[in-house]
Image (cartoon, rainbow, N blue to C red; front, top):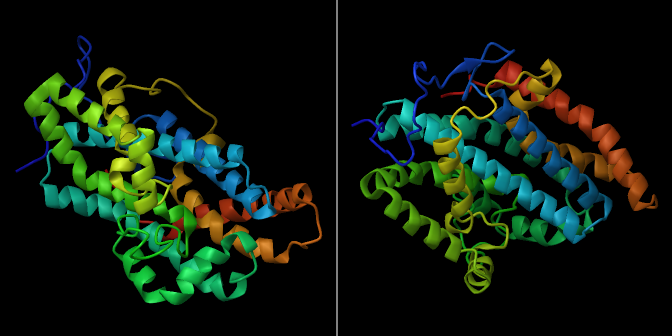
Length: 326
């Protein structure tokens, strides 16, 4: 049975005489990308560099609330974009659930595995060199194989911290959101069915339930069970739902806008950029003199890390990456 269910609340109203929506386009690399909207790809690229910039200042020694919130809001933006794209995908393609999940898995896993392997390879060089990472590294050392197994199965965001401390951050800290993405992919067809079955009332129920997860008392309990990062699906589901509804009202979001090709390329390699920047910065952080000021350290990490991150991202996407699947 396919996933292209009738879902009036999410299916956008076509403009008179409009052609049927397409899900595929071809980027500069000749690879199919998930949406006609280059704006979505550029948004991903912009958000990935916000996360990378946050890690630059984190490793340089700035641990303030602004740096923390910038990274959190960037990931929330990723989740909204994912909700938009998945709603579009499910409403414009008709494929069995198993094939859908297989495609989603192949969308996430190769780059995640590649960057995780890099992080493990450089780990002997970076281990114990950053004071801010000592707690995470202590858990990695004690529960190495458990962490590796959780990451290999993409369930590291599901594991309570009492069972496996620092599970979400182990080895490759940006990778915590990849587990969250996969959880959302697994649930998305059920959400679509629910909205198709119960319409506006069903949306209101989901919206209220997901907003309750953000209430301070509930969020505190979830954060103390699964970590404050939000790698457990209920902690971030509201933003995914917002993205799905955004597709309902703005299905052609940004599709008529053209951009400089350099920015387009940044969007096309945003996923690998989001992951690979961490092991690169961790290695550079070892080489930056500790006596330098935090500002100078941050400048050095960015000046050296940005081109290396771009180079690795381009090489992976153009050479080893499978085509981005619809």
